[in-house]
Length: 227
Image (tube, rainbow, N blue to C red; front, side, top):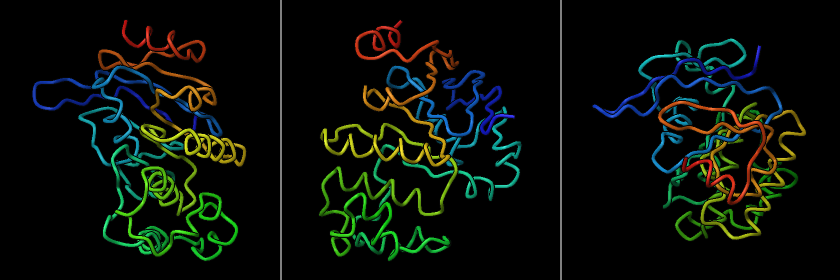
């Protein structure tokens, strides 16, 4: 049994069919990429995996458990980093973290001293309001919030989009560390650095997924996505 099983997922908005029988699986400790042209349904699919979007039909299971029958399964297994900013802009970095850490066994203070908050440099920005942060710091904070409950699965929508090289590399290195510690990653990306750490890739086209035999980068990937 795979950690994540996605079977025959369909989703439409009005008369537009976005997902037309999506099938794929993800094993524990893998990084799997979902690629495809803009508007092909990648974000919708990630939203379904994270529980923020309900499919019209089909099944998603985490370790054999159906999260749409028991939504606590989403909380136990997944952390979600959407492409748009999920943070509360007028609150401080620390207060945003308090919201996400409130039901966690982890300690903000400990993570500030020797954890992801320290690793991402957020310890130096605790009193800043989110609207004063750079795009890179906002993304670091979003990832830290998603990881507050120690999820086994990290779901990320274009994590490196519009970020500088240093921030992209920081995120890449953290994902490698997360996977080495048993974490599983599902992401959408056009970034070569992020795609290079993926074990497998699925291309989403016409609402269906096709697994690539290898990760194609740069021009080859873009050509395949436009076919």
